[in-house]
Image 1 (cartoon, rainbow over the protein chains, first blue to last red):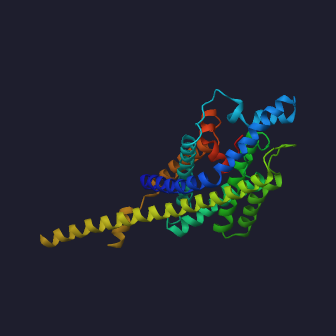
Image 2 (cartoon, rainbow over the protein chains, first blue to last red):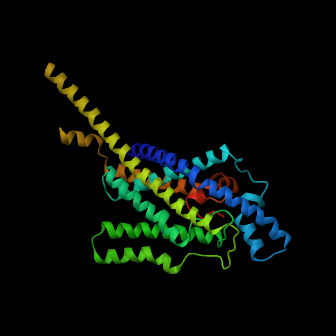
Image 3 (cartoon, each protein chain N blue to C red):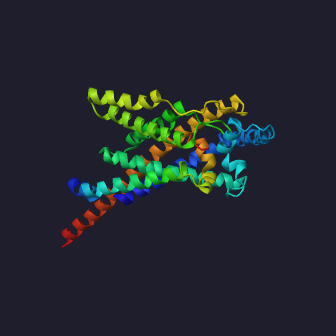
Length: 258
Length: 58
């Protein structure tokens, strides 16, 4: 059982990573590189102007990898950077596929492609769309509140939305629907942590384009993940069935011969 | 025959539980490493993916 889950998750994660990494290379990565030019241009100005307050803190906090910390390793520009982005996409893809498979198994659902696609769309809503309502996809150099606070809000929102969607769609009870709606809405009522005065040199058009493209890529990623999971699972089941039938047929044949 | 073939690939409840627990643990660990882990090297390697997929990055 576990081997079948692992194999299906690896295949689904790989397919989703292929689609998402290709789309990212052409849609989002160029915008990240463009935003980094604004970030790097803004950095020396902030230091020169002696802005010790928010702007300086914002830079130190928001760009540890890009310019502040010279000692830390980072992939060099060009192919290595694209390759490491694709690798991270693969790791997340397999991870999300495993979580999706665990949830579908726990709910006792079948692994046909319609079901896995539906659950994957739920994954998109929970882990991509709902957190983006409070914390829109950010380019490097854009302001934000303390990292740990945003990460905690992100995780709570994703978990709350996933729980809410499950309760609303799978438990046919008024109370469950009420609790489900509350679980989805509550993180947004509490509100995402935001920096008080987040200033950025990144043009608004670039940021808006990035947010829209990021969500589009996320949808393609999740849809491929769901379809891949269902497709490979069904394929494995069919193989097991046909293998067993062949075995059973040969045993019957031998008995007849005897 | 159909009962026999169904038994051939159906898992027992304990096998299912083990599969669920292992898949959930590995899955959460992989998403955490690629999306949230703070060591600088991991952050830098996954930087563009974290931005693209809207994980809080910096």
